[in-house]
Length: 408
Ligand SMILES: *Cc1c(COP(=O)(O)O)cnc(C)c1O
Image 1 (cartoon, rainbow, N blue to C red):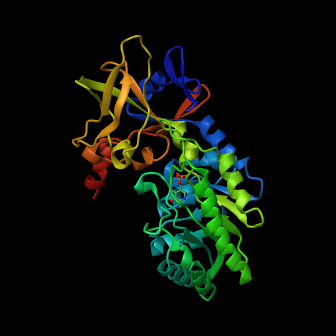
Image 2: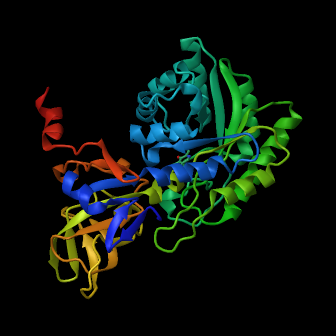
Image 3: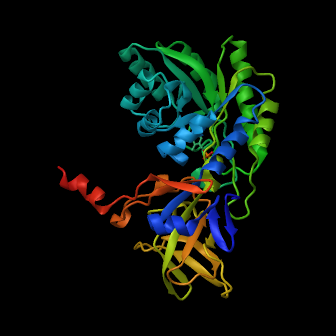
């Protein structure tokens, strides 16, 4: 969170006053620090002791200008839809830097991935593997395949962001892994390149990464016995960050622990961090419209930032301008007609009506999850670099929304 700090009592992103950005582009607006995004990517890239690839999880923040910055740092990319794949291409990223994950890939998505020569399609079920083999045959190419394993590890975070338990919809059961791998070897048009796992998000205990790596090692011991050579071991993303008082996991420690477990392996280590690269590099800036008893009603709602409503996620909310006024305990709520429309249940602020406030830690799963509920146009995105800032996504207009219905 160090890129958002007060200088002379007013909140800045890097060297730019948040007020200046708000007066140019209005509110609500997403603001990101380029320096922090680069530093977070570097923290992963520079910690790899053995050969590896850091594939940014595009779903955390998919703006093409952000993808370009991360490509420039040397990142690869992990996508979960054809839309995200096309975003990567639009950003000038080539197929060999891309991994395609996700439980429900359509035939068209698989065809696009294969014909774009991506690094790996990480499959999550036997039915999907059969489909990939069939589509590859139709195109006349060999599909690069990863198998996502479900290691049955329960991480301590909100149930909606756990993905590696036996009963979650993700991956192939650890105990079935070898059977499935043998099956892949007998199917045409597939090249088995690696195994993958991703046990969930906002993980704040290194032990979970160690456990997951140990599960992967079990499978590798079995594939060794069959003389199967793999190119990569993909350990997914999930590093936790500090929103209020959660433990931030240092990328260096995550990588150290995983490399320790896998130290005898020569396969490339792949990681897919999302939140830990962009989460604390972004803020949502919003203006207080009304104060009403203990509520601050602001101009951003759950359509702009759904994490509190969806996951009961907590974000730190701060005054943009500090004042000596007495702090009030406030619930920060939006203009949407839902009682779940809140950004914070309890925040101490000294702001009054008309003042700007900032919701911190909004860089990941913020703008990408925004919607048009209540026919609200989506917020713009602004990127700060040093003492400069530029628009990287314009504010949507109601005309943009209506055009899908009027241009028939
Ligand atoms: C969402 C996701 C990630 C990124 O998770 P973070 O918690 O944001 O690091 C990585 N890999 C896969 C397969 C995912 O679905």
